[in-house]
Length: 383
Image 1 (cartoon, rainbow, N blue to C red):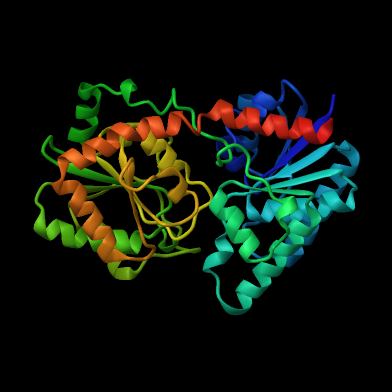
Image 2: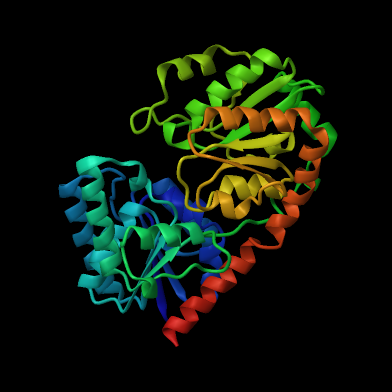
């Protein structure tokens, strides 16, 4: 049986980012997973996906000594396993495993790009990250940007040539399970219980944000816009589902203070299951600076919510202006404020967008469709 090794930096990416995909591919190939330690999480991947998983310590930061050790460990694994394909996700895993796979003589070295964190970097750090990116692409035989917008950005930055690039299906790394993200699963009674618990009344209009609470996701702009909305509208709540990353990307101190002190901002932290929170919300606000192909936007649209997103790759492919949401410029607090206000004041428009939202996902990003498109790609490479 032909063998494929899938590599991500941390185990949660292997288990959650690619949920179900590894099990599906196991019907056709021997699949082996590689990610950093976190034995419990690696065991969960084995249990859920039914694959072997090998730990290799990788960091998300620039750590030259640890990175070299990881390359050597990956090289030894690839030499021993002799895979037909090494396919990596996440920036660090991509760089380390593409170098190691090339050294080990793996014939097909594939890397999926799901966003480029380096786009926000400046000066010497940007130059270093650009160089690393080019090394990754140079060692890979195929690069899969998970959106058309990313494909364009990669070509504009001259990271690689167009012949190495391909977008699988309509974009997205793993699609969306629309039978799981289905508003029909949540009755009004069920939602009422959660709303009450969070202090949300029937008259409240709820804006939800789900994701990491960091500067890069536009949280500073979102809180500043909400602060102003809060002064003019009584019955509006902002629901934040996610955690801070204060060591990597902290928020402005005044924004942090507003989150802590404003009783209309409801912070629920990281949630294993975001669906009940989408079910009690009226719209998604997702003012991110950069994305690959954002799952949150697909999830909320699949749950029947209108979305306000920034004009960045991924977001501007999932959302069609005026159809299932609205698209605003990046880092523009005023436009964010005005767009939220418009959807608060215009019930008809909000409901029309919400009605179109679910179909916009089921028709283009159903999970099994994405898996089958990737399987076709593997088959064309290996046959």
